[in-house]
Amino acid sequence: MVGAGVLRECLEDPRVRSVLVLGRRPCGVTHPKLREIIRSDFVDYSGSAADLSGLDACFFCLGVSSAGMTEAAYTRVTYDLTLAAAEALLALNSSLTFCYVSGEGTDSTERGRFMWARVKGKTENDLLRLPCRTYLFRPGFIQPLKGVRSKTRLYQAVYDVLGPLFPLLRRAFPKHVTTTENVGRAMIEVAARGAMKRVLENPDINALAASA
Image (cartoon, rainbow, N blue to C red; front, side, top):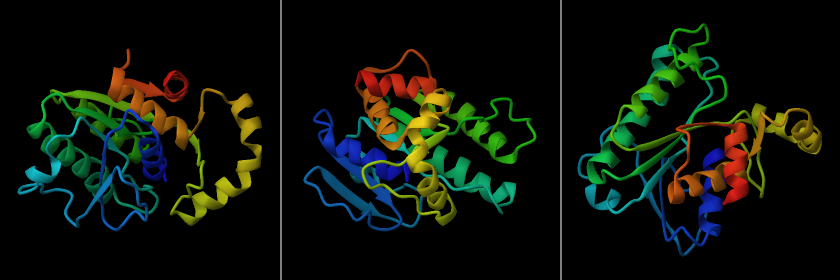
């Protein structure tokens, strides 16, 4: 859902010259800016230099719910795939900007009680150790806009119910609410101009989006 929203903002923003989407299946979007590569392996990028060269930024939006997953399985999707992509891209461009969608409540100590938060925290910490411009996005509640929908039925049902209440939620909890549009706009702004902070919470995301 987040990736679809970020893609829409990239295609609409004149500062973005071209977009390469890596996915397991076609994204269903056609646009002159858009190039798409379908692949099944997101760990081994050997032999992909020609496809991945010349990129200024990576907006890494891949993620799954931890519900029903073991820590090992969740780590493989959340940590292994993220670091593999970052290291492969960094090897091709040392000045790359890497924007990672983490989540509100991520545990930077890696020792908390919630498994997902520990794994996200380890992922964030190891990304920050890489020699590239890394920005960690920690959105809370994200309202999907511009026709974007979640592929997780339960999540989409929640969005359908809460959608009409979003203006009230935003006023009541301004520090915990954002939109797919704001996440995308903030990522583009960070890639273009940078940010004062490496870890970006909801208020930072919304402020960056407003300044874009």
